[in-house]
Amino acid sequence: MVSTILQTFCKILRGEMPSAKVYENDHVYAFMDVFPQTRGHTLVIPKSSRARNFLEESPSQLGALMQGVQTVARAVRAALNPDGLVITQFNGSAAGQTVFHLHFHIIPRWEGQAVGRHAEGGMADSNTLRALAAEIAAKIESVEPAPH
Image 1 (cartoon, rainbow, N blue to C red):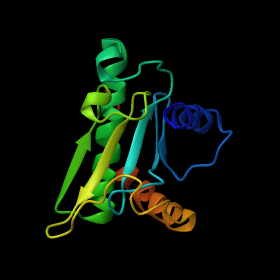
Image 2: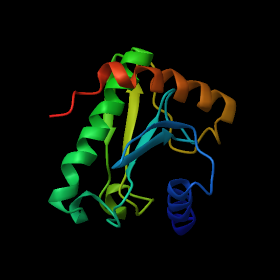
Image 3: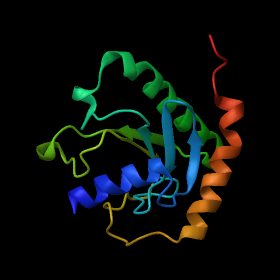
């Protein structure tokens, strides 16, 4: 299953597989997780990296990647108004990594609402994911920092 998911990420980047796109720039691609742990669970992946995890990424790539993660996280917060956000990334199978392609999870949290286990509830409805992606994407411009 791990290699299948890794291939899925590569296919999404190449445009060979559909995704509910939230954001894209020269460095990152963000899309809705099809097995969300909460409403609005979003993934951010680098577009030109071969790193399996954060520890393998080159320092020269991290700045643009982290800026993309921050932009998407701000848009998720602006669109969905959660009480908090979990921004996470796993390094190695012992840490819970199951997809060996560098990626970040942005998981909105609301007080009193439990977080589901990944893939526990099955695959989310694609129309629901596209609607959430559009809602979050509509906030990108208002939260994206001005170029330096």
